[in-house]
Length: 277
Image (cartoon, rainbow, N blue to C red):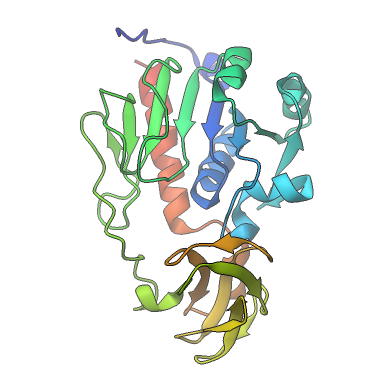
């Protein structure tokens, strides 16, 4: 399908509407940067989202009604008709909308961003909006999306890809303070997650951070608990359930990561590139 490329003035760019699939950590970092750049964004989520870095994830609004990250608040709404009123209040509307088609037809967004970070395409199409952006692996620029943004840590993080795909998922967490797999807590079996520490708490190597059913989950390194799943979440074996930051700075638990900021910069570049042609 031939795409319609829109050219617009600075004022016109500020009037663009953006629909974002997903409201986890990376999606929230992108949304925060776009909101601060005066774009109108609506985020959509599933009814029971799962996030480890909950203090910087707007999907927490699904449970709490609202969530503030670095001075920008997302507010849960129940129907698309409420989107405009939340924008007028200077906030980001978040809609629990398993039916993407219905929300998309109501909103008619200029930009659709797939920020689910599922490592595969869960239904996004290149004709969903005048500009369709996919974050990370699972998308091909020029086929199912217009632009892909690189999400792998390293030299190309945040790069705008106009043809082809992002780097494949390595399955290895990024290096922070010299640690990779050691800093991530993963479920050793299927079960129910019960945290016994809180986000922002400093722990020492060997400390019990959580229980999976009645089995303790032990910190492999010392640091600060940067993320934990909510109480009572049902998890599968190998699922990420927690994150310990060896740098030990509590403020990092409540602020957007450098990775999410870089990805947000890549998305911002893609939007300006596309509509300023």
